[in-house]
Length: 84
Image 1 (cartoon, rainbow, N blue to C red):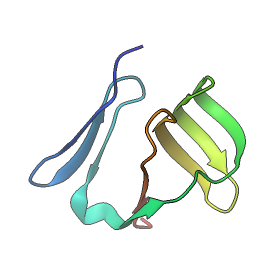
Image 2: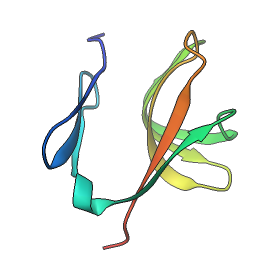
Image 3: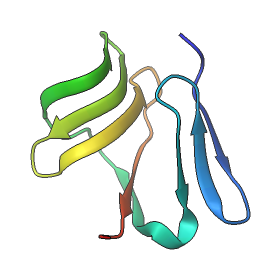
């Protein structure tokens, strides 16, 4: 498994590694720090080991999303995309 790297460029948020992703900053509605991860209802395509959650998931109260979580690290953040 490749390590996850998160980079903010002049116009994008770029996540590299397994299940990499890029989104324009203008397409992000909000970013917030979370105390805890919402309950995972379904892992639809991704990696779900003990402390690692990476890929496509469905969360309670959030719905479809991508997770890049290592529970060894206490900080969680959430970035919400604007509706298309």
